[in-house]
Length: 377
Image (cartoon, rainbow, N blue to C red; front, side, top):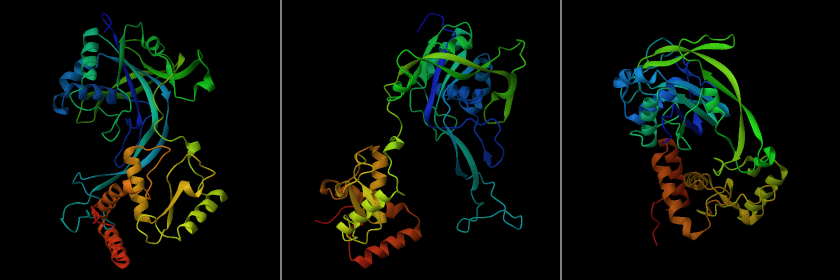
């Protein structure tokens, strides 16, 4: 650590983030960048401070001012979320709906907004003792930290260093913007980028005409109690450097165009080659599976396999679980058979009852026992 640092940097990057300051009832929106309540919540989580004990610690953390640099704004999207809060939902006649099996109120449904594939650099500035205490916690957190909601996990280490700077704008300009592999051709080595940033005015300072008042300074967690602060929209110019981190997903240029005539012809050709039978279980094939994405747009029969819906689901789940990119699961490979069978068995066990009955009936009619977790030899 540098001597007497007054600034702590946090890197908030991940597949999903959510920073709500204006959520109401079942509609939970996200702001375009991290809120102060969300960032201080990360710090308290790293310290192992519970919501019940947060008021005392927040009195110290409220001395910190915060700035945010938007390195990647991400895309906004919606998802559904259910909670068993015992509040229940109303039926058409105005009564609380109860679950038939338990008699308890049904789970509550809400719509949640997220930022996808976003990255932010956050600078917290204040007394060196507080900054050092926060840094120690983030370097060795007591509890796992998350990006606004527990389902949003960081893809990079949150702690990103310490320093001593005159103000937040100076701090946010000090660290380079990291280009992903393949992006340096667009920007070039030694180039710069101008990024949007939001910086907090210190308490007692005179705010300018472009400042806006936001209410996201937490007084205590567990209750909706927030103070205000003045925020200024700013721009910072930073150097561009290459990042050694792999993009979080397969590039979209490698994804097949399932509406193209080329794909329809390749799909039909593979189904004909397999006599419209699943290569894994020999039941009727409804789908065609990629065993590699290396030849997207010009697939051959060797790149594809005919599968039924169940076997295709099992292969896809294994691929997502392993994080496979170009090379995929091959259902015709004998060495992968046992693992695929185990995944099929989990599908049968965990899917809703109506779907399990359908699959089991299909298994009975075909006279096969391939749904067993361990095949007989």
